Image 1 (cartoon, one colour):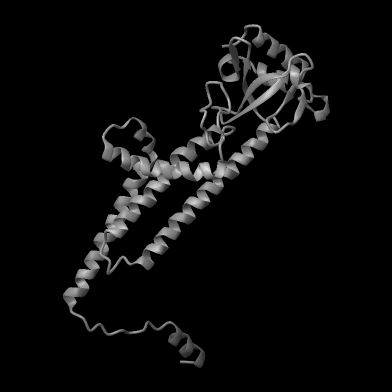
Image 2: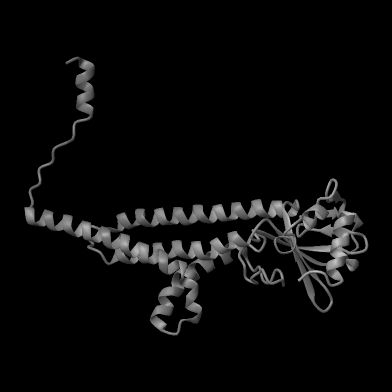
Length: 280
């Protein structure tokens, strides 16, 4: 054996440790560890499911179950409220929830409400199993690692939600993939949705993107007193939505971030048709 091989073998040698306790004690600890680990996994899985359905606590009358369901939902709600602030009512049209976490990205808001609650459910009830396990095996140091992993998972998940929302907001303000609109009148509103009306054509999209499509203008041309509300929807299945304002006479549209676009003549004709009664 060469010197190099000998040194390599020394580095990979597993140290031998003599166990001086009783075999029964060692076996008992192993059994407790396996049972405790399975228990933590079970509680975590159940917690994930409870968290996903925790919104049901609203209508639950049995107090103990209501509390069990409410804990992960309220943790999620507190997290998002601390990050979003008071978002209040956003849009009045039917597709929006007034308390949506991400009003411009309904799918992301759905994941924020249900997915974040599920993760908190796994963390909370997994922790409950950890703390009620054998303290000789499941120590505080071990739990700190357990808690850090859950905090990291929830942090990454929340960051991903904000990233997805920012991406959708950017696309909404660039007027990408418009698929519907809701025209708000003085007494009632009417909607035009491509998936509903355009079974044999692409009227809304063709009108919206006619020629070079909407043209970006300077904000100075705005006349706020002549503007009215217009809700826009983007992509299939309402994956994006935005509250905007439109000037029916001048034919420009203002996004929620203040970008001003001159709309095409074809779109303004379609808008006036909806305003006059065409649509649903």
